[in-house]
Image (cartoon, rainbow, N blue to C red; front, top):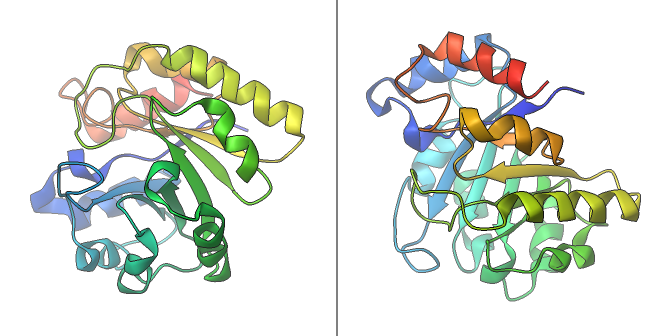
Length: 221
């Protein structure tokens, strides 16, 4: 299986989002990464729940990859119209009872994922491998685009891959943060399956989006 791509919409051309989503769809991109922040768990705000919901309209085959960086994330599920085809990540650090929240996501027909920040021990995910479709490993501190990679991110990724393989569970690994041209190949080698690509690769200034997507897939095949 080749690596999968999830371009971060917060790095896209916000004035032409509909046409850009359609183009990604035509290019065979698997996911569109949508960050939602509450200005409490992280000191930032991106799209509101109505915007998160509206991304469904121009989509054909591409799926929403909704990354909720917020306390009590379940309060937003109805407003986002989470359902079949969505992949939804909630942060271990932001949930009082992650098991119940993951079960809620799954009951809506979406794929539940647990996200962990750079300071959270990787072995934390062991308690959730029976319940999740994927683990989202943050390789920067959540909240802002364009950050340098957090220390030990590659080692943490390799450790996570070993944990998943040892468990025997069919759980994917998603990486989010400074997924650059220089780093994405090494991330793939260390176990990443899904790549949240932003300003340091797909949405950089070096290539038009169609060439950038093609180049990215070549590096993570």
